[in-house]
Image (cartoon, rainbow, N blue to C red; front, side):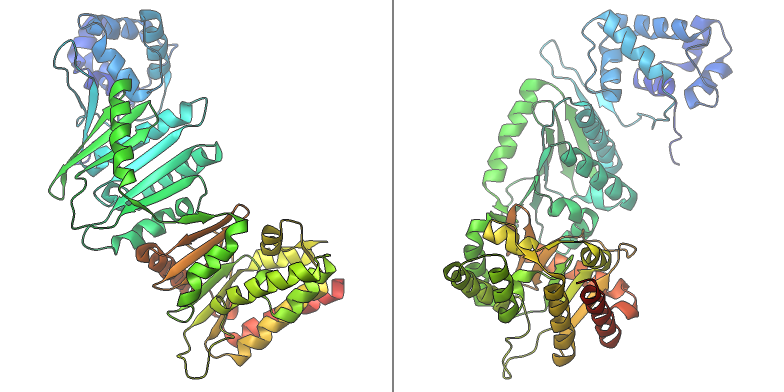
Length: 499
């Protein structure tokens, strides 16, 4: 049977093991009234004649143990709250009781103490308990005045996250909100024998995978048991230790003691040092290194190219020369760039397949609304050429139209080539990023800071699977060759009309 939600008073009473009849007798009210306050079916507001009496009873109930029961309960609700003295306890308690937010009964939370030198810790059972504990950690982060660092080191392949789709979405959104505030995060994956579960993690959290403020790590040799516990840590403030026996019997222990959290951080740092990064970051000046790393694997596996609009660093040579010349780039520099760009093109286009080589699928995925927006902009700046040249590189509408016409021509020329237009209305599990993905081999992401390269097979194939899913969900009129060709030519005509 599912637990019913409680009011904040009900949550506190259950946490402190206060009986309904005991509070009713102290207030000289019927027990049914207190029961309604507990469930929230009747509101105990600050205007109630009993509000202050309830506060004083809770304080007096916890007074014998030095207010430990009450302060631990309040810290569970407000991790960053100050409860050093009675005035602060009374203030935060008043705030808690005034809240109308329903809470889950704390039946599976326990606080252990073993003497004067003990460390207080809240215990949550099962995956549902771990999700509750994670939310408390995120609540704490939300209340921080300065951004901090988060660590998610999971030896159980994030079961607690993946088994509840609604929670996965909420978790991803809340982490993204913290990243926008300047937080940084590290995620560690400890693979079991099978890596297929990573696809589920990828679909649930792909925006986090491609965010610059997030570092992803994995332990490569899953047959070597490096860790059998999990840590989820907010820097120097709070840590969550996960321990499991078997597949289902797990516990999560929340620590707020500073010394304990620092020890946990040291253990997490040691584990991370034994792991490998999912992505390797490169500055724009290191683009040649990226190309040289992926060049030997240019003709194996299906190829996916997901871009908001065409990347002009991989257009045909005649057009690239014209764009570089129009932007005042010297012939000497152009020759250097052209050699590098042509090499990149050979691993990111279908045009260099030889007749005796198998024709692997080659798929462009463009974002429709972004393509249209750039057509209507007065000035179109090539993000890829600007990134690599270190100066703004503009593209005329005529040049943009020519690239679109070249794509339309090649679409019909090469059987293995496909162009798909995705829309903001489509249910895509990937964020709108610029990336090139060679199935089974490598993936390169490009953004304004540079490039990220991954050759870890699980993340590469998870991206390929997500892109395939995106293609399947796209309506036929935005992926069939003839209809896409017409759409491309219409876009080109609109560009030329505005030139």
